[in-house]
Image 1 (cartoon, rainbow, N blue to C red):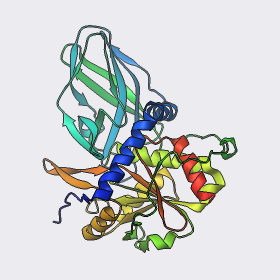
Image 2: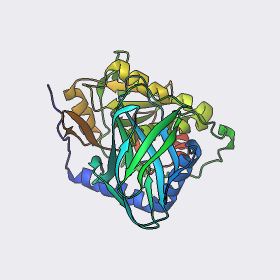
Image 3: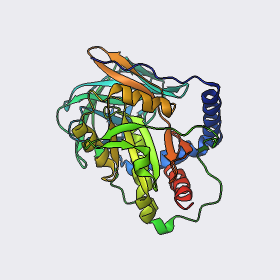
Image 4: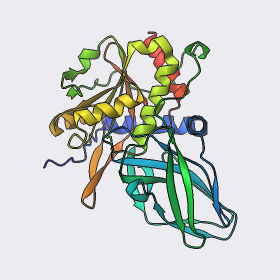
Length: 355
């Protein structure tokens, strides 16, 4: 079995670019985070609230899953109106097991780790939300379908068990504002700008239909490229969901664009699994795979870092979460982050497409 290793290009250029991206994200700051929260609030209608004693759960929701995907994720908020308590476990009959996981970005790498328990202060709140603490469902017994209800149970040290349901939200189904409602964009880009004297990246991979692909095949289109893996419960689906919404809002301009999802887990992300996954967000999205060596070369070319992390007999993948935009001439122009909002994507992709 071939194992993935951390792919790093620790050059002065890389360090300077990383610093610039982090500065751009910090400058966007609270406005971007607030925008992302507004999107999540709009696309994820809350399930009915549930309470046990002084503990209450509100706004529980989950994303639907594509066939072949064995993990899911659930988000909700816990409100504690009583004394301090501790959340010990999560139970879900629709999965082999449920775990609490924390997600954090460390030096640009998205790291996800199990959390044994979480303390909830007296009169406090605990948020399970995209990009942070979340409930991970492992070994889901059948795909989670849009419109369904997912039963869950929280186990507290003091309050005991609290049963509730999460509303299963579809992938890319909300009706966005029409493209004509998007105001004319100002001249400045909102995403981080890639230095044009820097070397443009390259890749040689296979699409999910087995066709050899390289960046030159998409010349004449604006390319949006994200590296991830199908079993990623948080960052990857969140980013693809935003891109799907942006493509809808761009209307006819989206016909001049192509979103590519490059798997970092070719052993489990077979072409069939990859196709079912990415087309669930938007049927125009394309998934790319290849040998470990080919994916390593593509990741290095885009300054993407990733590493396989053991989880008992299974494994997950830590990876950087930048999204790359190439113009119609194949030049790398912009870099987005998880904090980039749908409005920002619509704004900047529209600018690049209009050049």
